[in-house]
Amino acid sequence: MKQFTAFCFTRMSRSSAALAAGLLLAATIRYHLLENDALQCQADAAGGWCRLRAALGWTLYHQLVGLTGLALAIAAWLPTLRHLALPGLLVAGCGLALYNTTYAAFATIVALLAAQQPARPN
Image (cartoon, rainbow, N blue to C red; front, side, top):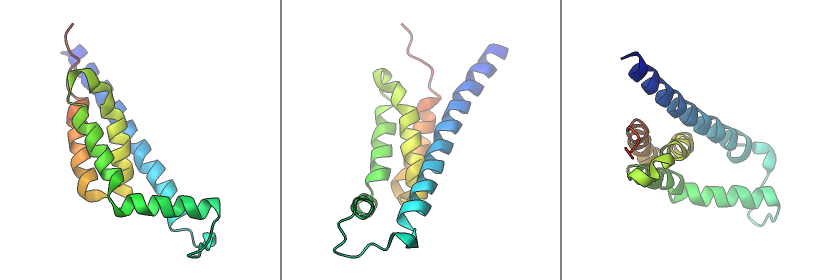
């Protein structure tokens, strides 16, 4: 029983760390790039930061962050792709803080459940 408890705790620790890292990355992007008033991007601005901000806005508008997290989370249910659960949690965490909560919330649950599955027996 002790070994099983340590095994589950290790999996939950990794899952929690991946989700926290995604939330931290998304908060950094959100408050330093998207909602930064100092970037003064105009409609015809050709600066690198302005193009990056526009591209990120396009991905958020089309919910691509949440959909990517969901795709990774669903793929993590396949036995050979079980390692995609943590990247799925990272992307889902980004989606939760970057206005993609519709798909990212579902991706978070699916990826958390996939990360808790035992390894495939050899």
